[in-house]
Structure formats: C-alpha cells, structure tokens
Length: 630
Image 1 (cartoon, rainbow, N blue to C red):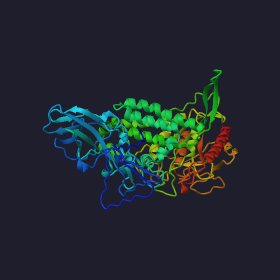
Image 2: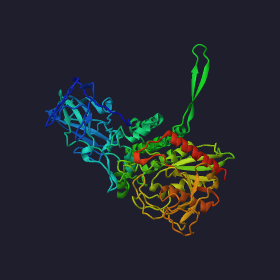
Image 3: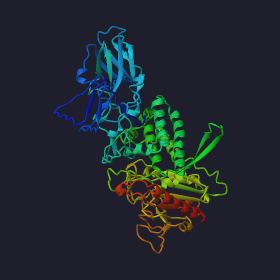
Image 4: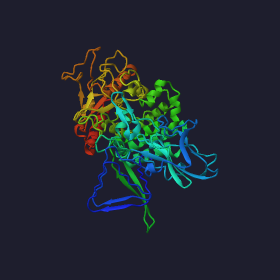
C-alpha cells in the first residue's frame, strides 16, 4: 500500500512504570526477545537518536546468527543469472530476482526454511506484504546437491524509502546516500539452526526512480522540521483530506505495484486512462458540491423514501495537485518502463536515472502524457452540450512557490492556486450566461516551451497543442491565475519576454528571453470591458511594472520586459493564446484574469474556506458580466 507501518516482534516482555526509568550507556544497548515487547506509560514515551530509528522484521542480534555449520551463503540473482549481492545498487525494485542458498555436506531432501527479510532506517517504512504473504516465505523446501533456489519474485516498489532523498541545488537533481537505502537479505533455518545471510555490508540494496524537485517537496513532514517522512507528510495530508482521493490513489498504487506484478504497458495505459479521468471528475465533483441521495425504508410500513442531503463544496485544488504527483511517481517506478528507457541513448538514460526527467523518446513519456491529458482535462473539453449558449474556455494553474523549507517566510507549502479552484468549480457550468469548459495547466516551463533543459527553452507546448484547436470553436478564452492580494484584474498587455523565475521543477529561463521566437513583442487583450461591471474587478493597464494612468498603448515593436501581470507563466499563457488568436481569429475575445492571492506565504497561511468562497463569487460575477460583452 501507499502507506502502512508494520513493526514485527515475537514473545513478551512487559515494562510498566509510574515514575521514570533512565538508562545511560556509553556504548550500545540491545534489547531483544523471541516473544514480544510491550511498553506502557501513564505519561509519554519519547524516542530520540542522533542517527535515526531502525524498524523492520524482528531480527536477533546479528553477531549471534551470522554463522552456520551447514549453510555457506545466500545470494541474490536477477533473471540473467547476474549475482546481485555485494551491495548492488543498480538493481531496481519491481524487477524479478531469486534467492539461492548454498549448503555443504547436506543430505538431499533435507528440508530448509527460507524467509525474505528487510531492514530500513525509516521508522515508517512499510514492508506490508512481506510477513503475511507466503510469496516471500519458502517453508519446508528440499535441498538438492547442496542448493536451494527460490522461484523468481519481485520487491514491491512501494518499499523504496524515498524519505531519505534530497535535492542537490547545485547539480539540480535528486540524490540518496548508499547508507540510507533499504537492504534485503534472508532468514534461513536449516538443521534446527538459524542464520541471516548475506551479512551486513553485503546485502541487496535496490533503487528506484528518484523523485524530481516538484515531487520531492510533498514528502516534507507536516511539523515543518525540514525532515521528510513517508507518512506524516504534506502530500499525504492533502490526498487523505478527502477520502475519495485517498481511495483513488491507494487503489491505483495497489493495482500498479501489488495486484498485478506482470502488467504490460498497454494494461498500465488502460488503467491510467480510467483512473486519471476519475481523478479529474472527482475533483470537479468535490469543488461543485452535490446532492447525496439515500434510499430508506420504513420498517413498519415498508414505504420507501429518498432522502436528499446537500453536500457543501470542498473548494480546494490541492488534493488533485498532490494526488497527481503521487500517482505519477508510482507510474515512474514501474519496472515495465525501465528496459525501454535503457535502450535509449546515454543522455536520455541519464535524464531519467540521474536527473529524474522522463525522456520524450520513451514509452513512459507517452503514459505520463496520457495521465496529464486526462487528469488536467486537456483532451476532454466538450462543447457539444452548449446548445445556443456562448462557449467559454477557462484555464487555471497548479499551486506554485511551495518549498517553504528552502524559502521560509516567502514560499508556502500549504498554498492553493485559486485559479485551479475556479477551473474545477466552473467546469461544465451553464449558469453564467455561457457554457464553460475548463482545464488546469502546470506551473512548469517545460510544458510551455517543450524543452526539458534546466535553464534553456523556447518553442511550442501545451498551449499550441491543447488550446489552439478551440480558437475557431469558442466565443471566449479566459486564462486565469493567482495575482497579488486584493487585486482582481484583467491584464491589458502580455509580452513575449520572460523573467525566468524558478518554476515548480526549479527550472529557470534566461531573463529577457522570448518564450517563442516571434516578431510580435506584445499582445493586447480582447476581453470585453463589461468585466468591470462586476464589483472589485478592473483592467490593469500597467506594463514594465510602471503605472499607466493614461492607458497609453506601447509602440508596435516596443520590447516589454513585463506585461501587465508580470513576466512569469501567467503572462506567458496570456501572450501565447493572444498570439494564436491574432494569427487565426483576431476578433475572438481572449485575455488573462489575474485573481487575488488569499494566503499569506510569510506565515504559511492555510486555505480559508470563507475567503476562497467569497473570491469564487467575485470571479463568477466577473465572468458573468464579461460574457455579456461578447
């Protein structure tokens, strides 16, 4: 499963205290039992250690069980019969392997008992399928020619302990230290004696896809200590905040890594198509509110009744954002894609295995894009039910500036993006004088310019691929994003130039560079002036971050370092859509609605339900008035 904690012991030792027990040692204290250990306290129990806590299956002191008169060694082999012992670190979770036990002077037919074991430095590492599942226990097997080999099996990719990963801000990639990897070995019982092989220092230490910068932020502990945790982290907090999201992610995790060990890529794609779509629809459902119908039956009369309960909308885009990240990490760790990536050139392999960037030439890239298309609603925009209503396409953005551990009092890991809430709450809406379809786009340069380079990129991307086809089909396109506190404005000018500020992947772009090669330096909005008939909405005429009280229009070829709304991706989506409109359908109403920021990053403010509800009312009214002008 995605998160489970198992601590396994076996016998009993009970300590009950009303006062204090203090134990001091200058060396090492070992407590072990063949039974169980129970600790009770009327107060609190505190564990602390400079080098971390170690949890896993019960293992007696190793120095007592490291030799055996008959068992010589235990070794891991892959499907090609390659030896995987000696701390192999290039073997991946999910790939097939087997255990081979070598004995000496053993009579053929003698029974041997073998059980897979694991050890982790993580206090919350789940090895939840290991102990109860006989797949990893080989009891009462016969030794022949002084050998016993298990059938091939797989190590669950969910057993990889990514809470020890860390992002290198100099190399711009994610790393994990060898000593922090989980290790695997075997408990062998033979001739009534037990041994644990391979010995420490020679055990199997498999690896997995390492989370990229955006994916890694979610593992920060919710106590803001700067540590990472497999369970008490922000990613889980937001996913688990709505039980339906938790169910979707957990079921997806089980399907991909536990229920079907030999999935083909086509089978994975089929599950992605279904589940990623379900994720979007669930997010829309939660952000719109709904009527819950319950069928009841009177026990005495037998009369059946339908009780309708109005369930209030959960106005929050964060469960969708974090669920998408968690599920894509699950996908990227499936072994079905590894061989495909290893057939690519060295740079592409390095991109994935070192830089955590999925190569565009890989089969995995197509699967991730399928997930993006469904969970962001890129390919399910449908105006067929619009009838005679105006057709309006609205886009929102992912949350951004989330790394409050690296950038305290500036970024906010609790940050929502109210534009994402707008997109979810207004999806399929036909009550604002128009029929509305929506999508949510990422806060990543790569998706906009098609480049996977850290600091260099220019070209076409998601806007040209997914929004351009609707220029001839709709009556208005409104791109929406988060702006400044207490500011709800229609940006008048968008520029082709970028400021280059870090995105959600920690990527940058050269300041002053163009997002796309063009002679069209800036674009002016064509959204109708009726937007300002809504309270608190106005047009923003400034550019280059300077007041423009006289509403002066720049010169035709004038280079604007900043548009009305700045020089980040909000300006970029405004410009890109406007450029397409100017080339294909100049009369189409397009532009950018910058809506107010309602969370204070300086104090890690959480999303306030009343604030987001009030803001949504302002935006609804603005769009309603805007539609009247087309």
